Amino acid sequence: MGFTNPTIVLLLIASFVALTVYFKRQKQLPTPVLNTSVLRAKAFVQACLIIMVMFMIFNASMTLMPIYIQNIRGLTALQSGLLLLSGGLLMGILGPITGRLFDKIGGKPFAVLGMLLIVVSSLFLSRLDAQSTSLTISFLFLMLMTGNALILTPLTTSAMNALPLSLIPHGSAMNSATRQLFAAIGTAIFVSLMGTKASLEQGFQFTYQAIAGLAFLGLFLALSLPRKH
Image 1 (spheres, rainbow, N blue to C red):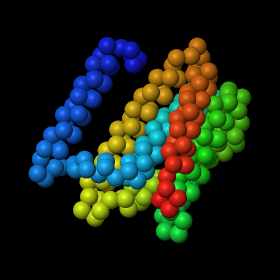
Image 2 (spheres, rainbow, N blue to C red):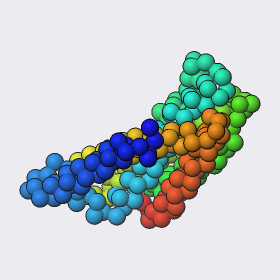
Image 3 (tube, one colour):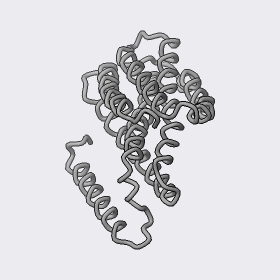
């Protein structure tokens, strides 16, 4: 079942209509559950868009990399987990560090450097094959996760800083909802792309070329952020 399947198309249309009705209804309520006026803050929207791109790539990679390691490289699930472990640990370590540095330099440098790392690592990941070494796989995934870590905490803070105090709870809810939504969409799209080629290896390489293209868009968005954002 791909994106041309009638059931999938109908579900996508129904989801879009439901979201449209929901947001329209929220605007009419005196005390909305989710205040959509947060979308009027340009800096908030810019930061959220970058986070959405990051989450699309992050979630897709968490699905694609184990498939590559186990089905193309032929390693076990345990070996796959060990190869990808360093990326998760680094994200946990960098989170509080980037949060502290944000107060000194703002979010834009983190966003630009993070997206640049994601672009470069994605391009190299698109060249992996059945003979690629475990060290190469681990290093490239570590680079990808470093880019994600540089973006997540600083840009989330930037998004909240763009809003008045009264709208921060709504901004936090909007940010969480959109990034989870687009993380799911990204995973669905990129896993589907992987199945469009004759072999799994070619599909993996093609998918990371597409991911690199999305990361270029994220880099453009990061460069468009205000200097002190």
